[in-house]
Length: 626
Image (tube, rainbow, N blue to C red; front, side, top):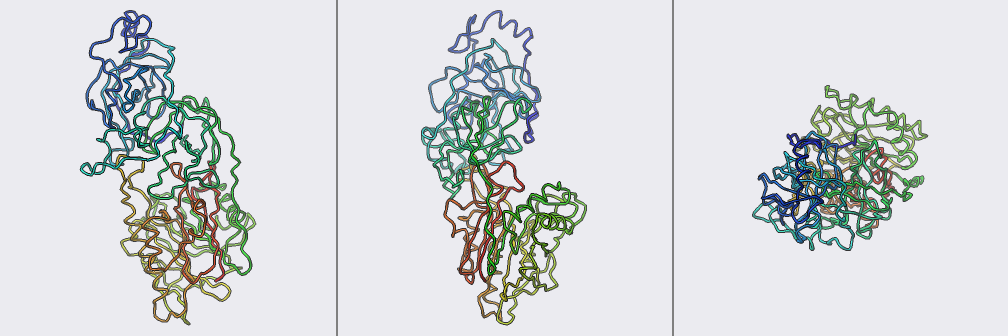
């Protein structure tokens, strides 16, 4: 069976089997589909409804909620797993480019008893189904439910697929939604020649094809990958498509899944920079995980683009190397191979940085919600794996959270932890910090130091409700003090999708990250303004900020000139640490105080672009001389 995300679609269906009396009668008497008479057909059924009429010229069917009969066409695709059903397409159509000639027929728990090439007559209830739920903000899929299906004849030629190319796809992504309808685009007439989302909607359920398409989003465990119809659209040096602003939606992207059972043909493994060669053909579907999707009944072959995992250079004797890495819910229950791969990357790809801020370290019982908050075993396994890989014996500092207070996977108690190589850098321990006590900046000998090290930044501020609190540590390197603030801001959960029905989408989660950014900025301000501070402080703020370099979150951090975003030192095409929906984008950032005048940042691409990942984030390394 194909891997698929869980779907909540439990409905009854009525689908006459091929040997039924109803089917025998239909075949004996003949049936004439509207405008298309199949061999032996007699007359069109009175009251028949064309697919184009059901689809209409907006996103919502004008017949939604009605029971329709005599819906005829050719079966163009069958999905026997997950959300079961089949697609049927009118081979002639009404000539209006805004009205789709295809539709999905949902058969509930039953495997559809039709085959590609069957001529069918369907009755069913017109429904607008919202994958992921109506509150998720996605678009709806027009479909027929509770169907009665008659197979009239088989072996028919299929409609010619609509070839999707960069030249035929509009360069504007989406219309602006109706402000009187909450910003929704649902009631707006489709302008398929102006907007990419409207173009895709006008083809919903119809057979489409792509040819020799570059891969811009790696294949996943759910059997999906992303291609682009426009390779020149905001390209990265490694073959991806970069998300560079809220207006740069990159309409050339399209998700591809397979209708072929994995037992017959495993879904191909593909990395960014590969190519889906040949022709990939199938109905155009829509789901909540990425939007419009080519459900391939014919899937091309993946040609290897030769993408290699990067390695950064080692730090020089006078350079301090500070890195950040999201290790994706690391816990003792993970297989040894995950620890080995993460540790190998630290040594070989990151060149054993002096300080390593790690995010998503889980407690010692992993996702078991048993009250455990310590993470000593997780960190022991990780640091020993680093030694086994030929790296230094890192020490670590962290603060256990209050059980269940920091978000993430329930029971996991993820937190930020600071690892350091004691052969290269010293940690200044100042006891007294705990999960709910804030560390403060204290001037000592003219330098900004910490009241508690390690310590947490404003942990009781409501900005950190159900979210990871920043961990700050005081280090000494070659006689200089360096403060490192490790972060993992609130996730983007709850944001409306870019491919959804609300345009522009509401980014509701940004409010909390903005408050978090201000709290961190206020702490950094204290390193300049606290009593007794006379020298500029070396401060590094880094980690998974869960936001873009052009976001209000990033702007808040760099406000007042307290911090500079080190990503700005890279060419724009190289600014990305994560790949989502086929878009290479920034989630992880490194910022420095003005005292750090010369530095070098390297985003080390080892995960996000690859199907085979140790984590879904790419780490980054900052090198500088304090």
